[in-house]
Image 1 (cartoon, each protein chain N blue to C red):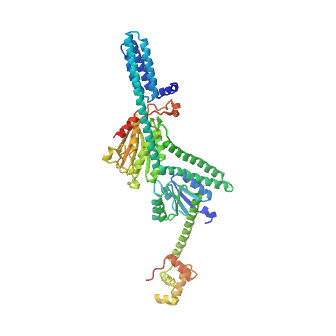
Image 2 (tube, one colour; image 1 turned 90 degrees about the vertical axis):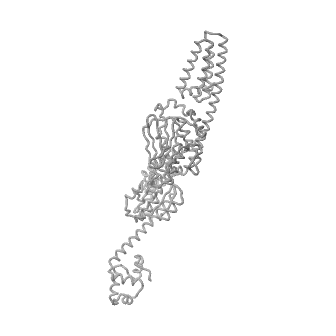
Image 3 (cartoon, each protein chain N blue to C red; image 1 turned 60 degrees about the vertical axis):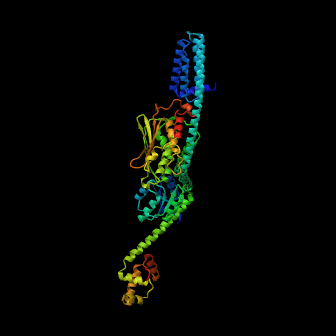
Length: 385
Length: 211
């Protein structure tokens, strides 16, 4: 397990509080085990420590903790001054057996959870790719606007330069605009690439207003195509939340596409979409309100179920996946009627404890592939119904 | 239309995308056109009336108004400016509707520079010709207004090819009097020959179906 050493320190940095608790509990058990007679098998309680280690979400961490517990048990047996040697040996052996068995179970559990998390991540990514397909016209529009401008400026620059005398001022200005527009087109492409990239979900401090705005930037063409007027009320001083940017954007894209569908029958001049973010206390809410057909009472209770759809071509995965993502982030998803017509879809996430960026940022590109422990369960819930 | 006259013509650009607007502005100015750019159809309407030959380059999907509805609106207001539609989406029904409603051209973004410039040249030429026709017609109408009712009666019969004698008979006048009215009408209408007068009557729509 030499290779595990540097990673072990990374695990420490990921969940310092959890590791403190593990360490303190292990020490307490060790002390209790050492000061009491050998007949009293306090060391069995190390099982609890191992179960706590499951929460790190790392097989390697569980193993390391188990090795530590074994070492403490053996040391404690050697140091304990009182009690019968024989009973002590039997108790120590039993403790070690319990530690071994629970370690094996814990590792198995962790592997299953990891597989479930991976499956959930893949499912979310698949649904993102489907989303991108639905948005292709809009994305093409977002790219073609700057490309149109680039072509026009390019031709203009050539003309300005071949005029006599050459108009360098105009030419330079046109070239500067070309650079700006090229960057804009590049940014659209980068955004799309981020959304479909096979990246492990990572939790980082996020400004939800910025995250939402970035997602909306891909939708402008789509909204325009449907004659939908977009209004945004994005708060600028939101507390940071900890989350995966791409997955949260996916939810917003989903909500907005649903809203556009719901407004298909709405007269064009009242197709309004309001996207807002707001802080309330220790949480941040993102809300997408439309003036569409709304949600029937019958559909309301089943909205977030997998394979439930009111659309003719819907797979019924969008909202179910959105829900599992929100729950994996420790938040809540909701659907409510909008006044006077339409629907209000949104989610609330807890604000991150510290608004300052995480000091372990160096590790960020190394891959924080750890997700909140709820992910797997949330997916199972969505599927079970 | 020759390129040396382009600076007397204005191309109006309405597009809510600032990059595209700037690009078109620079391109059209580099060719020598006067340009006026607007972010919305509302801003464009505030810049009316259009006093010189002009055309409008309009994005078909504007946030405040659908380009096609705007086209209808302009027609309703009697504003005849050739429209070149730009569209980011290749939807056929829209282009058909636009062309049916009298659009001058329908281009897909991103378009070829030459296509746009050709479309603009064509639209401006059409607008210029339309304006000349309008001017001619307006001055014809003004001249026709100066005719007395008797002169109009005589003119109406002249253009139908009646001889003075026949006109005199129909109107119950002497042939001399008809000649005088006829002479006044020709002078007032600035017509050198009877054939000129016939052409003018045609432009004025004086020919009624003869029952």
